[in-house]
Length: 229
Ligand code: SF4
Image (cartoon, protein in one colour):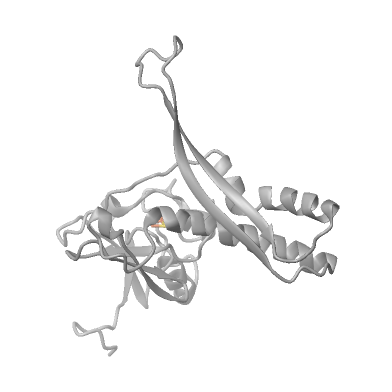
Protein backbone atom coordinates (compact mmCIF):
# COMPACT_ATOMS: atom_id res chain seq x y z
CA UNK A 1 0.00 0.00 0.00
CA UNK A 2 1.41 3.36 -0.98
CA UNK A 3 -0.45 6.63 -0.65
CA UNK A 4 -0.68 8.75 -3.77
CA UNK A 5 0.52 11.87 -1.96
CA UNK A 6 3.73 12.02 0.04
CA UNK A 7 1.92 14.19 2.60
CA UNK A 8 -1.85 14.11 3.02
CA UNK A 9 -4.05 17.04 2.09
CA UNK A 10 -4.38 18.83 5.40
CA UNK A 11 -7.57 20.75 6.18
CA UNK A 12 -8.48 22.80 9.25
CA UNK A 13 -11.54 24.80 10.29
CA UNK A 14 -12.10 27.12 13.23
CA UNK A 15 -15.29 28.82 14.33
CA UNK A 16 -15.53 31.13 11.30
CA UNK A 17 -18.39 30.11 9.03
CA UNK A 18 -17.21 28.16 7.02
CA UNK A 19 -13.68 28.88 5.86
CA UNK A 20 -11.40 25.88 5.77
CA UNK A 21 -7.69 26.20 5.20
CA UNK A 22 -6.48 23.52 2.89
CA UNK A 23 -2.75 22.87 2.80
CA UNK A 24 -1.20 21.09 -0.10
CA UNK A 25 2.45 20.32 -0.86
CA UNK A 26 3.27 23.83 -2.10
CA UNK A 27 0.94 26.23 -0.30
CA UNK A 28 -2.50 26.88 1.14
CA UNK A 29 -5.91 27.98 -0.11
CA UNK A 30 -9.30 28.70 1.41
CA UNK A 31 -12.35 26.56 0.82
CA UNK A 32 -15.71 28.00 1.85
CA UNK A 33 -19.44 27.65 1.41
CA UNK A 34 -21.57 29.97 -0.72
CA UNK A 35 -23.52 32.74 1.01
CA UNK A 36 -26.75 30.78 0.46
CA UNK A 37 -25.36 28.04 2.70
CA UNK A 38 -24.16 30.45 5.39
CA UNK A 39 -20.56 30.93 4.20
CA UNK A 40 -18.79 33.95 2.77
CA UNK A 41 -17.85 32.44 -0.60
CA UNK A 42 -14.16 33.17 0.03
CA UNK A 43 -13.07 30.07 -1.85
CA UNK A 44 -14.38 27.09 -3.74
CA UNK A 45 -16.97 24.89 -2.03
CA UNK A 46 -16.40 21.12 -1.79
CA UNK A 47 -18.50 20.33 -4.89
CA UNK A 48 -16.56 22.88 -6.91
CA UNK A 49 -13.31 21.37 -5.68
CA UNK A 50 -14.45 17.91 -6.75
CA UNK A 51 -15.42 19.14 -10.21
CA UNK A 52 -12.21 21.20 -10.47
CA UNK A 53 -10.24 18.06 -9.85
CA UNK A 54 -11.95 16.35 -12.78
CA UNK A 55 -11.68 19.42 -15.06
CA UNK A 56 -7.98 19.96 -14.39
CA UNK A 57 -7.11 16.28 -14.66
CA UNK A 58 -8.97 16.08 -17.98
CA UNK A 59 -7.17 19.13 -19.34
CA UNK A 60 -3.72 18.03 -18.21
CA UNK A 61 -4.20 14.50 -19.57
CA UNK A 62 -5.34 15.82 -22.96
CA UNK A 63 -2.51 18.37 -23.07
CA UNK A 64 0.09 15.65 -22.39
CA UNK A 65 -1.36 13.54 -25.20
CA UNK A 66 -1.57 16.47 -27.64
CA UNK A 67 2.04 17.46 -26.91
CA UNK A 68 3.21 13.90 -27.36
CA UNK A 69 1.47 13.73 -30.73
CA UNK A 70 2.75 17.16 -31.74
CA UNK A 71 -0.76 18.33 -32.68
CA UNK A 72 -1.45 22.03 -33.06
CA UNK A 73 -4.25 22.51 -30.53
CA UNK A 74 -3.38 25.62 -28.52
CA UNK A 75 -6.35 25.90 -26.15
CA UNK A 76 -8.98 23.62 -24.70
CA UNK A 77 -11.83 24.37 -22.30
CA UNK A 78 -13.56 21.93 -19.95
CA UNK A 79 -16.83 22.73 -18.21
CA UNK A 80 -17.94 20.35 -15.47
CA UNK A 81 -21.15 20.24 -13.50
CA UNK A 82 -23.18 17.66 -11.66
CA UNK A 83 -26.71 16.75 -10.66
CA UNK A 84 -28.51 13.97 -8.85
CA UNK A 85 -30.99 11.60 -10.37
CA UNK A 86 -33.37 9.56 -8.24
CA UNK A 87 -34.67 6.33 -9.65
CA UNK A 88 -38.12 5.41 -8.37
CA UNK A 89 -38.18 2.60 -5.83
CA UNK A 90 -39.02 -0.68 -7.52
CA UNK A 91 -39.85 -4.24 -6.40
CA UNK A 92 -36.12 -4.95 -6.02
CA UNK A 93 -35.81 -2.09 -3.50
CA UNK A 94 -37.40 -3.35 -0.25
CA UNK A 95 -36.60 -0.16 1.67
CA UNK A 96 -38.47 1.86 -0.94
CA UNK A 97 -36.15 4.87 -0.98
CA UNK A 98 -35.19 4.67 -4.64
CA UNK A 99 -31.64 4.91 -5.84
CA UNK A 100 -29.75 8.19 -6.09
CA UNK A 101 -27.15 8.46 -8.82
CA UNK A 102 -24.83 11.43 -9.16
CA UNK A 103 -24.30 12.37 -12.79
CA UNK A 104 -21.26 14.46 -13.70
CA UNK A 105 -21.36 16.15 -17.08
CA UNK A 106 -18.09 17.18 -18.65
CA UNK A 107 -18.05 19.33 -21.80
CA UNK A 108 -14.87 19.61 -23.83
CA UNK A 109 -14.60 22.63 -26.10
CA UNK A 110 -11.80 23.23 -28.57
CA UNK A 111 -11.19 26.89 -29.31
CA UNK A 112 -9.59 26.19 -32.68
CA UNK A 113 -10.40 23.82 -35.56
CA UNK A 114 -9.63 20.18 -34.65
CA UNK A 115 -10.03 17.20 -36.99
CA UNK A 116 -12.91 14.83 -36.19
CA UNK A 117 -10.51 11.92 -35.70
CA UNK A 118 -8.39 13.89 -33.22
CA UNK A 119 -11.52 14.95 -31.31
CA UNK A 120 -12.63 11.33 -31.05
CA UNK A 121 -9.23 10.23 -29.77
CA UNK A 122 -9.13 13.08 -27.25
CA UNK A 123 -12.58 12.13 -26.00
CA UNK A 124 -11.26 8.63 -25.27
CA UNK A 125 -8.18 10.10 -23.58
CA UNK A 126 -10.37 12.39 -21.44
CA UNK A 127 -12.49 9.42 -20.37
CA UNK A 128 -9.36 7.68 -19.15
CA UNK A 129 -7.84 10.52 -17.16
CA UNK A 130 -6.83 9.36 -13.66
CA UNK A 131 -9.57 11.27 -11.83
CA UNK A 132 -12.24 9.89 -14.20
CA UNK A 133 -11.02 6.41 -13.40
CA UNK A 134 -11.20 7.09 -9.66
CA UNK A 135 -14.70 8.60 -9.84
CA UNK A 136 -16.02 5.78 -12.00
CA UNK A 137 -14.16 3.04 -10.18
CA UNK A 138 -14.61 1.39 -6.84
CA UNK A 139 -14.13 4.07 -4.19
CA UNK A 140 -14.10 3.59 -0.45
CA UNK A 141 -13.64 6.41 2.09
CA UNK A 142 -12.12 5.22 5.34
CA UNK A 143 -12.49 7.60 8.28
CA UNK A 144 -10.35 7.35 11.38
CA UNK A 145 -11.07 9.22 14.56
CA UNK A 146 -7.92 10.44 16.24
CA UNK A 147 -7.69 11.02 19.93
CA UNK A 148 -5.70 13.97 21.10
CA UNK A 149 -5.18 13.48 24.77
CA UNK A 150 -1.67 13.59 26.17
CA UNK A 151 -2.79 10.84 28.52
CA UNK A 152 -2.93 8.35 25.66
CA UNK A 153 -0.81 5.28 26.13
CA UNK A 154 2.72 5.70 24.75
CA UNK A 155 5.38 3.08 24.22
CA UNK A 156 9.03 4.08 23.77
CA UNK A 157 11.58 2.28 21.64
CA UNK A 158 15.11 3.70 22.02
CA UNK A 159 18.47 3.25 20.40
CA UNK A 160 21.60 5.21 21.36
CA UNK A 161 20.52 8.39 19.58
CA UNK A 162 16.75 8.59 19.38
CA UNK A 163 13.59 7.32 21.01
CA UNK A 164 10.65 6.43 18.83
CA UNK A 165 7.32 6.97 20.58
CA UNK A 166 4.32 4.93 19.46
CA UNK A 167 0.76 5.74 20.54
CA UNK A 168 -1.22 2.56 19.81
CA UNK A 169 -4.60 4.28 19.93
CA UNK A 170 -3.60 6.68 17.17
CA UNK A 171 -2.35 3.95 14.88
CA UNK A 172 -4.46 3.52 11.76
CA UNK A 173 -2.85 0.20 11.02
CA UNK A 174 -2.55 1.49 7.49
CA UNK A 175 0.63 -0.53 7.14
CA UNK A 176 2.68 2.32 5.76
CA UNK A 177 5.59 2.01 8.14
CA UNK A 178 6.00 -1.73 8.07
CA UNK A 179 5.76 -1.87 4.28
CA UNK A 180 8.28 0.91 3.81
CA UNK A 181 10.78 0.01 6.53
CA UNK A 182 10.29 -3.63 7.55
CA UNK A 183 13.77 -3.77 9.11
CA UNK A 184 12.42 -1.55 11.90
CA UNK A 185 8.65 -1.98 11.90
CA UNK A 186 7.45 -5.57 12.10
CA UNK A 187 3.90 -5.96 13.35
CA UNK A 188 4.34 -9.72 13.80
CA UNK A 189 6.74 -9.16 16.67
CA UNK A 190 5.65 -8.23 20.19
CA UNK A 191 8.19 -5.42 20.46
CA UNK A 192 7.18 -4.42 16.96
CA UNK A 193 9.55 -1.45 16.56
CA UNK A 194 13.24 -2.28 16.42
CA UNK A 195 15.11 1.04 16.74
CA UNK A 196 18.38 -0.73 15.94
CA UNK A 197 17.14 -2.02 12.59
CA UNK A 198 18.20 1.01 10.52
CA UNK A 199 20.13 4.25 10.82
CA UNK A 200 18.44 6.84 13.03
CA UNK A 201 18.08 9.29 10.11
CA UNK A 202 16.18 6.65 8.10
CA UNK A 203 13.94 5.85 11.08
CA UNK A 204 13.20 9.56 11.57
CA UNK A 205 12.33 9.90 7.89
CA UNK A 206 9.84 7.03 8.21
CA UNK A 207 8.39 8.30 11.49
CA UNK A 208 7.63 11.62 9.78
CA UNK A 209 5.57 9.77 7.17
CA UNK A 210 3.14 8.32 9.72
CA UNK A 211 -0.21 9.80 8.65
CA UNK A 212 -1.95 9.55 12.00
CA UNK A 213 0.49 10.98 14.52
CA UNK A 214 0.89 7.54 16.06
CA UNK A 215 4.65 7.80 15.63
CA UNK A 216 6.92 10.55 16.89
CA UNK A 217 10.50 10.71 18.05
CA UNK A 218 12.88 12.71 20.14
CA UNK A 219 16.65 12.82 20.39
CA UNK A 220 17.86 11.19 23.58
CA UNK A 221 20.10 14.17 24.31
CA UNK A 222 17.27 16.69 23.81
CA UNK A 223 16.43 19.01 26.70
CA UNK A 224 12.89 20.02 27.69
CA UNK A 225 13.03 23.12 25.47
CA UNK A 226 13.94 21.04 22.43
CA UNK A 227 17.63 22.00 22.18
CA UNK A 228 20.26 19.28 21.90
CA UNK A 229 22.87 18.75 24.61
S1 SF4 B 1 2.41 3.72 13.18
FE1 SF4 B 1 1.65 5.21 11.68
S2 SF4 B 1 2.48 4.50 9.73
FE2 SF4 B 1 2.68 2.81 11.16
S3 SF4 B 1 0.85 1.59 10.88
FE3 SF4 B 1 0.42 3.02 12.55
S4 SF4 B 1 -0.52 4.77 11.55
FE4 SF4 B 1 0.45 3.59 9.94
